[in-house]
Length: 633
Image 1 (tube, rainbow, N blue to C red):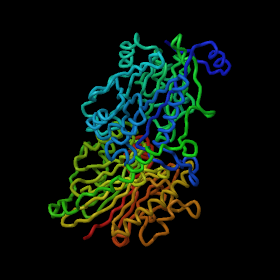
Image 2 (image 1 turned 90 degrees about the horizontal axis):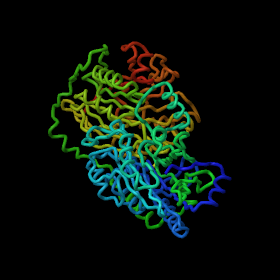
Image 3 (image 1 turned 90 degrees about the vertical axis):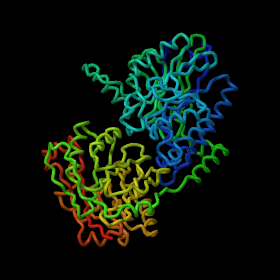
Image 4 (image 1 turned 120 degrees about the vertical axis):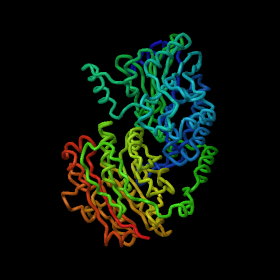
């Protein structure tokens, strides 16, 4: 059953002369994230971008290949390794139904759900399975109605068993309510159980997994082997590690990470082939496996292009299918505008609301003074650096700090583990929160006091084309502020701009986009705007090096509150550099109160928890920044 792998061209040529073989065209997608619409490929050339053909181009490529293969007597297999709908409004608006409809048109052979496919709950995923014309393969998870453990495909007389595996770290990336009722089993034991079931019925064993190949796969593999040699044991974390531990699997098709590779990974010991495509349907993965029909083994593999197995879906190269393209365009054009709750629903029953502090005093392990005031609206921005850096220790420390600081709203950046963030918030009963729904990674959150704010609407503009925002479109929330007999609608924007590399260009372009969006709000009378976040640049930069010119030059409508303190070395938000990267900007509705009575400051938490080294090691490399302003009628 085990394959014979050779990457030498002369051996490949000779072996093909003496074997009765056929070509298995393995097509694979992963991390589509709802991006089946046409969009500029800004990662190729931001100024003059070719257009990605999207789902209509993928349909053309697969359909044409199937036609060619049918004539040649070869075989096509098409799979997806998860995260199909979260990431654009097109995907999330109907819980993924339109993405499933497109996948049905594509005639996928098999699918393994990803973490973000649970974003709208287990029942929604079960509904998608009913709508699909292809199996959902998840052998190591219970709780999804109708799911299957494996599928056997007859490829020209060679039987291929496909076993589905999902990541064991499902709960890390989800709110608890979205994976309630499901249970993930051990990867290896589940895989071995399924292999025993099908061993006598198949010739080759493929695994369709949502485990991912990490960035810098060679370095990660070396680190993994080093851990083994040192006797460090840990659960299997990705597809490379799974390939190392199983000698019975021929191919692992994986997803969960949007990083694609032009060449397969081949484990040096087990010789298992591992493949992963780029995310957001920028292309389609295509590996050609040469199958020896007599011996039922993989002789070797080849690529469809000179550059490897990643086929970019540019309209210049692949013309989109007109029927599919028209359908997707109609779906996009019919997306509903941002749904807002009726303001009047909250005006009659929110009279003389008590908005005084109700602290929980949950741990009392550190002495952190309150910086919030019952007389002021206190809004803070806080990059928590890949939350939680140190697991439960970070969560407990941050929860206590939030409780002690007693601010009203916090814009949080860099949430890695959504499950842990939700767990921490459950320790803060006076607060509620919202999370970004369209970010590719490093989620944004807005934490707010329940007794002072009612969420009216949530939006993530630019999610359909978020390159300039580095896959993290701004999280926009409209709140009704109600304190005493004061009621006021407030728009909070939380964002995390691009760092490093081509960051300056992308920040400049994203600020043009955001300025136009917020200027439109102001022109419609929505002046009460507060923008917080990790802006990843300094206000002091000049000329072509300034990222925020559209806002700085529009002094009639926008003002950076942090401009007051950016030159104070004791208040730098990023002391490690040192620099001031975290800012708060206000719309003109707050100009007068800020100029007369507003306060802006860094919150030097390290002073209360043992110094900068302790703070940076436990919580973050960024300090929080706090804006306090009075709110009047």
